[in-house]
Image 1 (cartoon, rainbow, N blue to C red):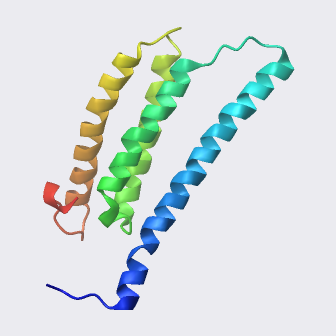
Image 2 (cartoon, rainbow, N blue to C red):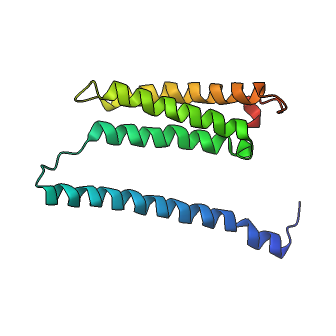
Image 3 (cartoon, rainbow, N blue to C red):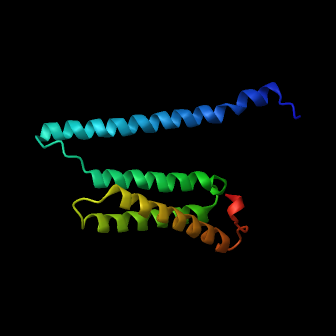
Length: 144
């Protein structure tokens, strides 16, 4: 059994605390955004009609790209990774904007199915870019 030094044990919890603080800050930002939107609608005299399709699209964008970023954390220091993520995000946002503007309402189940397929495509696209970028090491599913 490996024995950890006292300094290694004390520093092992630091990344988890930082992650927890980031999650708390993100939650506060989301709550503040919803509150600010509600205040804006109240001052503008608008009905309490939320743009649900856009909120769902934003949430699913965060889920798809958030999990992808987490899965590929080992590649954060490599430029090809960020190029692939950036291009994918631009394509995602452009297509989402064009498609969602065509509909008044979009069932959440359809957005969720599209997000599932997109997550698979995104992972495959990033892996392909990382495999083919000149000078970079081979990427397997086990590397993620």
